Image (cartoon, rainbow, N blue to C red; front, side):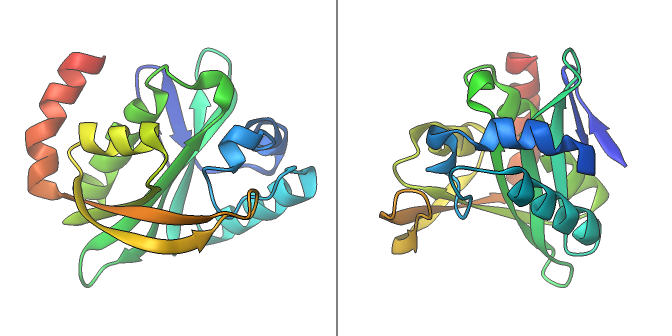
Length: 189
């Protein structure tokens, strides 16, 4: 199974994706915003993560690798995890290779992932945790209709920097997604 947008393919990981994964995550400015990714990021770490993602695919999570169609290259990742079928909710997270920042690729990928969550998985809520000091990710959550539901203070120690971070907790309800989606698609693509 894969999801497709104008510029992207969101698909199941493959072991041979490890080089693109290392290129994207072996970057200090990416690793410091995404816990628990080690830095430097190695082939061993990439293969281990890909193998785990393949095993969990469709069971515990949907870890979509984001492939840029024009380059046939993995430029990021968006995960739907902790899927709770009883409460009909899940958690999402994402990252993008620094070379591809500020091109709205994450927004485009999140639109496809949100559609998948609400239309295919039939969930009612999607949650997201973002470091409070990650301005770009916080802005993306708000742009996509997520509501700030709280802050976890001194919640996480970053593997790369050793700093303790606060998390902003965001939630997106299906009915809110239906309201904001048409505006996003019209404006973005």
